[in-house]
Image (cartoon, rainbow, N blue to C red; front, side):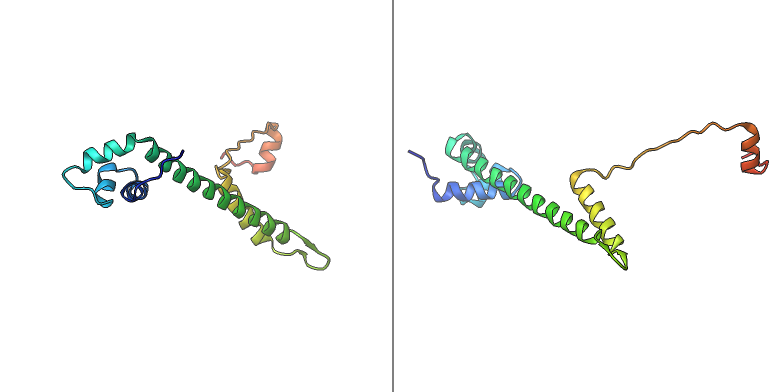
Length: 137
């Protein structure tokens, strides 16, 4: 047997989720007295039926976020593939679109950190002198 939320409990859950987790304000918004809102809000958060409703709403929001992100990544992948298609006469069709889509794709995946690269090459002093034309930089 599953317990259903009352109308006020349902309003409390929705207000609680919308206001970022303030139980007192959620209780007031749901129609509870301002004098008892703090106690009612705290009490509501201990009720399993309300805890389950909050978790269910949070899981649904998380699933929608993941699905939305997945759809965006698939669309970006399609843009990348299309933009990078070779045309017999024109070469790559749209390099700037491909680069922009790859950049957006990387940012969504968290791959946007700058790459720190340092290369050191040893050259003889004679070669260094010829390359820099004697400059002491």
